[in-house]
Length: 252
Image (cartoon, rainbow, N blue to C red; front, side, top):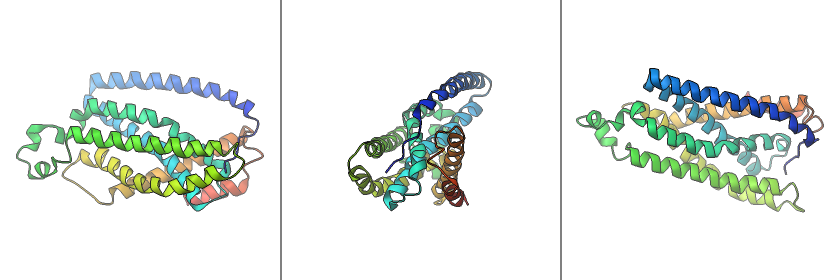
């Protein structure tokens, strides 16, 4: 079951953060526009790095929550809603992928027909590494993530007012399905967006490497936000030292 944030009226103070984030968004867009005029390749490389980082956070939050539902963990109830909130960024992941579509020619050598022709490795991978299939499979992956985010987090919020534990039990049934699809789609995204930057090099462990970084970052972000919300009094009577210790053990 989820835990509601105490004294939600204090959440109005978060409005200043929204304004700050809006300003930073405008500054980021302006900087990206300027970078395009100076060096397109480096600009799109920076865009790709940012896209992958925040996409990983968005889906990583759902991964963390799914693990808790699957195992029936109770310790994480006060902090799980924080991780769930990361999925609010998923629609922007789709927008980011559209942006990547405009910069693919600057990022990926396999999008250049003259580079592929005569290169045995690239010709062999052409059935997988081509723009159309790249976009289709990544859109499908994001669609899967969005479906499970709506399904699982929808049940999580229903639990706040439900008279029994049926929403949580439903999530316990859906979580293993999501986790299997997550493993496949996140690995695919890691291969497509990052590993294919150098299509001559490959590693079957690259997806695991990216996952390890993602999960550690999720735990760190959740710990930081938990401490911040607790200091503001929003989780004062909900989160105690034991919860922070558990997050620390996870990171360790």
